Amino acid sequence: MDMQGTVDAIADAMAGETDRGAVARYIPELAKVDPARFGIAVATADGGLYAAGDARVPFSIQSVSKVFTLALALGQRGDALWRRVGREPSGHAFNSILQLEHEAGLPRNPFINAGALVVTDTILEGHQPREVLGELLRFVRAASGDEAIHIDEAVAASEQRTGHRNTALAEFMAAHGNMVNPVALTCGTYFHQCAIEMTCVQLALAGRFLVGAGDGPHLVAPPRMRRILALMMTCGHYDASGDFAYRVGLPGKSGVGGGILVIAPGRASVAVWSPGLNRNGNSALGTRAVERLARETGWSVFE
Ligand code: GLU
Image (cartoon, rainbow, N blue to C red; front, top):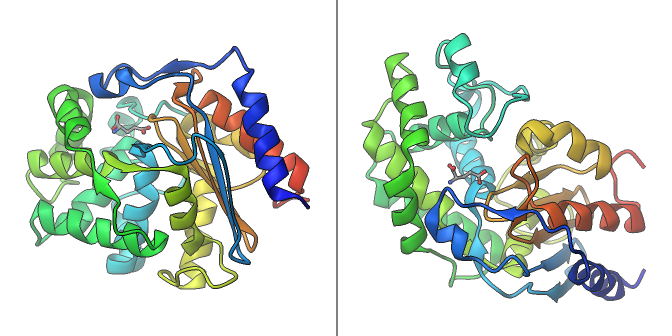
């Protein structure tokens, strides 16, 4: 199929969309991003790279970073990680504290904020934040083959100043004995990991470590890769994970910066970005774009 033609047509269609969602405002630095942006990049297992729209404009990957930290934590701790965080969909908003109270400080999964804070706390144990962030950047740079990827300090500082809810989640888990490091250190590391800046092209290339075919980077053994993908399918879009699986049929992980990383196992890694979010906090146009891509390629895992 003509993949470049397909991504060009999707970018053209998205440029004409009027219902673009709303840019996240609770992190002040993210509120400045132009809502008219849309980018898409597809990195295929056979080494192809197809990009359209704003695919080379950097954006804040935010919660997409949780895929990379989960890969690192599983690499270090293996199944012991599951003593501190579950692997069930939450059915609650990304930053909800409600469930934590009921479930005694054990977050539902590694992709809601509480779970991601536990994952970061795990890889921080015995290290300094800058060592962990260095390791994370090394992983992402190795996955994408791009040494230029970095953290946007202005975004990290902006979230640090306003991250009361995440601090509350971490303090609550600390009260239940589910935080190893001082809360300020874990939260500071988490805010920085979320502030990694990437383009769709860089993110699509980085996602190849989860495609499991072709000569992408071999950073994670296949059994672990399948587990990360299962979690992306069931928990990657917060309380809209079921809707994403229904519409797209592929594992994905979204972030409030408007980026989504989607994996078509054995076939391709896809990154889309459009900063306007739907009411579940997932990119409105990004979701529509990958829904159309999956339909036109027949890449749904259920095809
Ligand atoms: N840094 C954001 C937060 O913790 C990430 C949330 C997201 O991307 O969904 O609020």
